[in-house]
Image: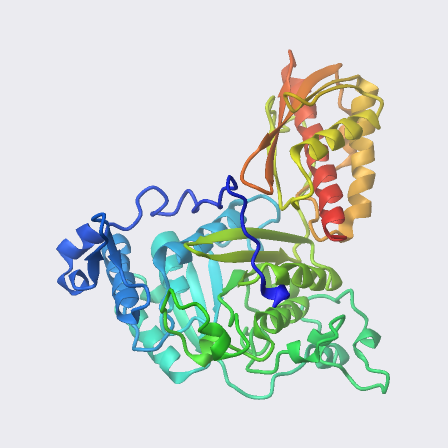
Length: 502
């Protein structure tokens, strides 16, 4: 089917790299070394004609034993799962943990509880492997609630926790009662907003006959994509609880036949772990709906996504429920691609300007998620346009991908003032700007600024935009950093908005 056709990367197009803080980013698992230490793993290691060690990825016992020895040798965790349960790969699951770490360390949104030192996470569908709570607790010292519905998952998750007493106090396993799941529209009609009103009106959730429609069918003609199943967050998260994040490895497929289409790997997986009616699209839609009621109960809501084609739909649903920010990433999964989707209802940090403003004469930022039709030259031209609108003098050099700018005091004030108005207009954008700046910046004494903006290609779809100031003093450096923040906001808004039309 055309809709399932995967895009082939260009010959010279690089794949995303493993997270730099991942233990395996520079040192992938050494099968020969592990086999010499663990006899139980030795029998699964064979050698190719050129002498390279390998394991049979279609053998569930081999993948399970590899996971066991990696967790034991590299992280100090005792671990096991029974036959047939989903077997995680340690390097890939670590990528997700480190991405959440990035979100928590960023200054995009503030901490919910500034007095709490411990980070608290919620793992939706933790499974018998309980991999995310185990990794998060062992690597980061985070505490977790892991939820699941099946007895075997609950039993083995508890076993894996008890077998690691040094972190067992950090992890709670919570049973999800399988029953009729309450629809989002019913909560709205009962006035249970869970921390804030959604931007959707109740009348939008009604059919022409005046009957409530399943909320995940809103703006989606395919009613088969509606999730009906055990509770996910609503009905599992308790009153008064607060979490820094939730995470989820959702059921990606609609049928077990679809789940078994990859003959190159065997990682197990039960129907409860792998499939649900409507697949990941319906399941993640329900997480979004639950989040629109729970709002700031979580600082960040996150999930994996198996199909890039679903990202556009899911981001559109996030716009509907009025999130403050959306972030995406791509995970390295060997020959399989997965994407990360994160969102929040916590307002972006409003950065006030003071005499102690952070001064950086060479600020930079990443511009991520560009579609293929946009190139570095498109961004460079947008940079030139941004500064020309304020009346600043610009000189674009397409060969070196730079723009040289000279801006007077009035030009700088115009840039900052226009940026503030732009922020107000952009508040509903799916990629809401990371920071706002108060109008007090307009009174800063600013000398003429001479600086250069350079655009560098990173991995496909990602650009580095860097500013370098010429002969600036420390006070000018503070103003220059603010101007670069405005430029970042403008470029993200411009290209995010255009991407939604693709």
